[in-house]
Image (cartoon, rainbow, N blue to C red; front, side, top):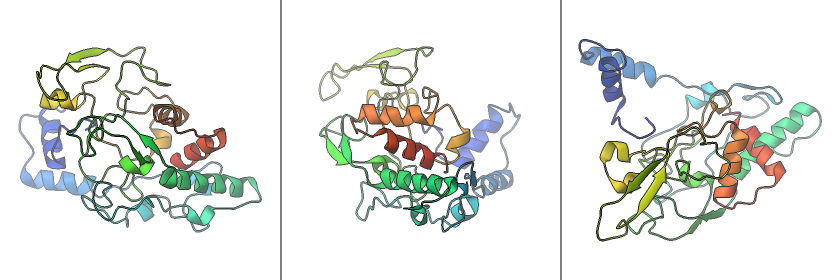
Length: 274
């Protein structure tokens, strides 16, 4: 769940059966085992790009078969832990510097987008849950990071440990995003001391705070897995980005990155292959 309300797949399966499906009883342990085994055995990823062709050819390692062999464990390559590397996506390095026909040029664009995602550095400021308040993991100070700061799981792109954050998507005023049809909630923190005293949030979604009741969690969401993006519009938890171009433009303006038009196009080409 975007707001992290379910602690496990077993819990999610139980609550979905009793809630959404209006079941008369919870699944048995054996049934839950079957459900979780099925869910954890699914590997979905784009396999074909209309311009670049197969995403597991010419030395590339895209697609679900390769994803099924990708190592993962909780905390792998965590940006807040020792050993972090920004070489998060390693699918299309073999496609760098290709030239020739249209397919080759499309593959080169995807490789450039992957490299941008891994390496472009910019100043990250005011992210609730990361570096907005003094109690956040990095304190209340700007720092230099990149896309992989919050998307650090190798070749998957979610955060490998629990880190609900607010990058500004739920804000009542946002660059690029279309929130005209969304409600706006005003949340006034009741703390009388500390960094949250007197803070007022204006957001289209309470995020984690709807579950925890904590002012510090207003607008916070988990980072999603970045697979199947080409088929999953609209984007973000509230559907406020109609296209991947809108997603890239949002980040560009939110963090004053300064992407060129070519870099934006390359990033979108890359994201569409995941």
